[in-house]
Length: 90
Image (cartoon, rainbow, N blue to C red; front, side, top):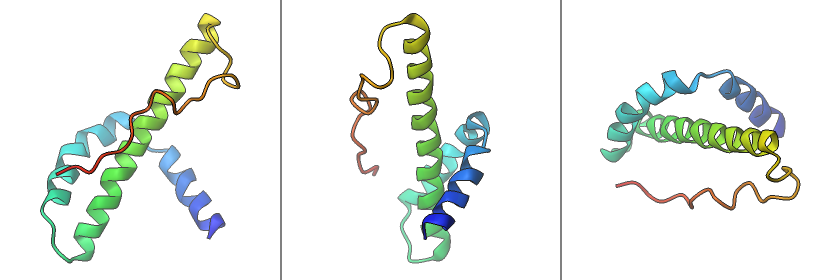
């Protein structure tokens, strides 16, 4: 299971955030219209993959800025402290 998840993560890391952001509205709209199909399930996963890439990049960029400005080392700061809790989207 871990190996499979690692391979999925490797593939996700190759995705471009700008391209994904263009798909965000499409998959949000699809996810909001529930049905019992596999396509709906895939839409939910794709929507959250897009969001996970966006959050990962925001955390990464914030940490790079902090390191370069000498504010805090990444070991001393809880990097998830400033990330809002996930909320259900209706």
